[in-house]
Image 1 (cartoon, helix red, strand yellow):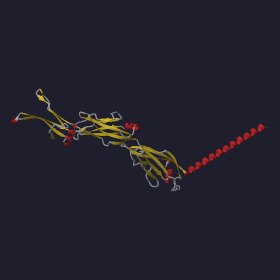
Image 2 (cartoon, rainbow, N blue to C red):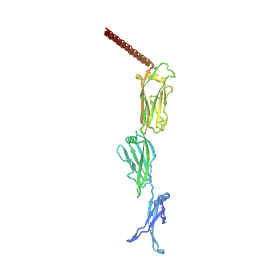
Image 3 (cartoon, rainbow, N blue to C red):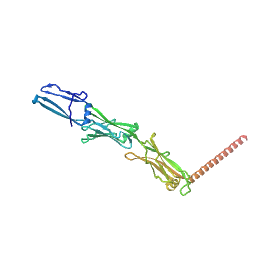
Image 4 (tube, one colour):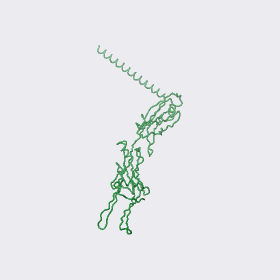
Length: 339
């Protein structure tokens, strides 16, 4: 604590003796805001003493009155001030109000107002130990989805007003809203194999599936491909590289031709489905896409080709018969006319 000697300094203090009335007089001391800021830099609590002296010589007396002032410079802070959020999650923002003398009621969060299934605002509790209070704003997943449809980025401002001048004290957080998606094109495909147990050329055709991951805030390090697992000679999995410009990433699964042959003998009806999946957000939301493979034996291809040729030959034979019949009818009609 400090006892402050006060002088007539227009930029710091203003002293007025006041006027005498009804056996009393009120003196005033005014302290400027800049001076208060300087005082706070030296100590939080300061003593100011009003002193009146009367009498003469040995009979000089004085009377005093003291006021202790505690100085506060409220601040607001939000950490982090920039945040990436997923529409799959709810999002909470905390605003720490520091160096305040008591509970601040009615903290505002522009542009949010308390609305069911949209925004929840809380003033928080005051701590007399830390002289602080933490207000919070909670945004529902449904509201984040609406915000994302309206625009990519949104800013929320925590605001309190303090002092006689209602000075605003603020902090902000800008959120960027993401809704990750996964896509495989086409989602269904026919492929061919010699079949299990047959000689497979090492130069045979493998099959590669590409999974396009979009609306991502950063690179996804783990992309799973169920039921495939990385194994030499069977499956090759690549997470892919993140493109910051398009905010996308393309993961790939390559199935070796030998594995395709084995799958033909293992799966029912030659059908197998591969699922590309990532897990995002606080809730661990799954984002996935699939491709169903219909595996055919190469002998099926020959058989189908033979059927196609046979159909063509039958159609040609029918065409020939029709042409012969039409020609005979034409000749008969011609002979009738001549006779």
